[in-house]
Image 1: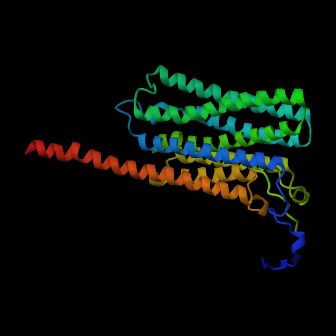
Image 2: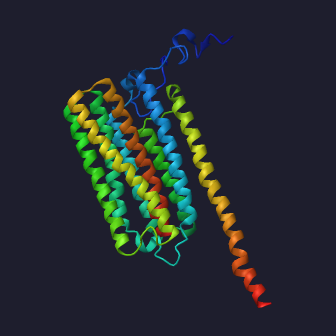
Image 3: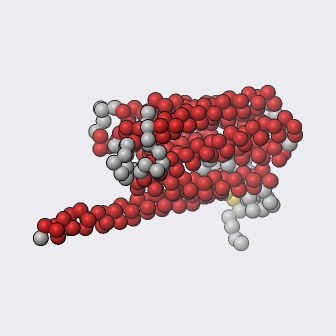
Length: 210
Length: 131
């Protein structure tokens, strides 16, 4: 193929393209594959968001979002998840510098904040069910519990994953495979926070104000 | 100009040569946290204030949410426009396309169906009964 020999005055040899460099390292392949999985997970959430948006007014004479949602709880949940995403990022920095104490500390704070988020969410669900707002009550509540419950399930799985990863760090140290899994975990945790931005905007804030 | 040997993994820290001049990674995470907190606080304020025109609140909330998702992608997931991140961007763009088709398509179709379903049962049926 006849291509220009210089790009911006730099000889082409200095710019070895990705295809000429041979197969990518495993770390990149693993994280890219997990990135594809996360995007498909987000597509699934998009379907749940769409069904929620369609069914939000189908309350069947039951309670509406404005009557059920407590914004203070949602604000605390949001801050918990956001700060846990931040500490998860700091944890991945500690992993990159092979800092065992920093890794454990970051994981502990991330876990505590994630558990606080989950506790608040479960208390909210229990409170709603105690007031008769069960998933069976209306199409709106079915869609609400499916969407928010699915996100909560992801957070639960993330917490279990985090515990498993800390056991692996304790037993195997910073082995290459453990580092790859930790990279995937931090991707997962940040992606959950992105989904939560959609949840608190579409479900809680728009549900109360519109 | 630095040579790009491989793409960068999503969520991975930028390459070493970028790190030399760029601010430290911890600072980037902290900056992302602060901006995200400000956007979250703004969202909650917009939803509860009576100062704004009510018709624009929904749009404002959507814009704030999309902005915050962008902040998360750039500061926490390190998705950049760099040439080593092209594959990540392309996958993200395809994912967003599917998300858009699913959400907008569902809302469009079901709203349309809903309108067609409700009209005869409430208005036309009543008119027929009255006749």
